[in-house]
Amino acid sequence: MKLDIVAFGAHPDDVELGCAGTLLKEMSLGKKVGIIDLTRGELGTRGSAEIRDQEAHAAAQILGVSVRENLNMRDGFFVNDEKHQLEIVKIIRKYQPEIVLCNAIEDRHIDHGKGSKLVSDACFLSGLVKIETFLEGQKQAAWRPKVVYHYIQWKNIEPDFVVDITGFTDQKIQAILAYGSQFYDKNSKEPESPISSKNFLESLTYRSRDLGRLVGVDHGEGFTTERYLAVNSLGDLV
Image (cartoon, rainbow, N blue to C red; front, side, top):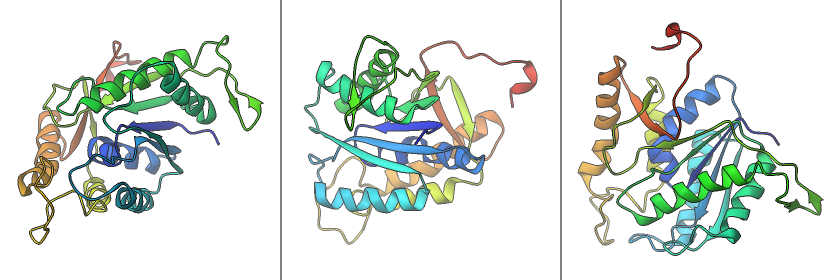
């Protein structure tokens, strides 16, 4: 199955938090979208890997993505080496996306920066014909996405561009709340974590409103790029 966009996250819930509104908007425009989680989030303070598996499945159903896979890399300990790069290369060649979205280049959680560089490097390597990979016994064709964009996570990094996600915020929040073990619940007996506070949950909306305010829309999601943005004409800018 060819996908238009593949969004990678170091952990289940990274994609929902960082770019779910953008994915929803692109799907409304007819794009096919998939999510690839690098790890099962087994080192998370709350819940368990098994619970996260269930939550990720529920979130994918809410979003309506075509594909969701988990590569079962080690949470906290995966590295950017040949073995892990080739796992990503196989996925890129399998789905042949035009656009790849991935973690923030720099962030509070060490896996976010590592995951960002791992995916970005693999996107380049995937286009090299002399790197051979196989899927179900068949040699894969080389494929390089046109662009790699990085969604914003914990840190308030200045975006290179903002996507107008007005009209898609409620569904985005529903997908995030599918991870019931991770976020604010006044009745929870689980230990507190940086993302389990009421303030963090509320920040998801006030951040999107603030980014939207800055570009003249109701809600926005910000991204950074690895290369200059190009437009065909000034009229392409909102």
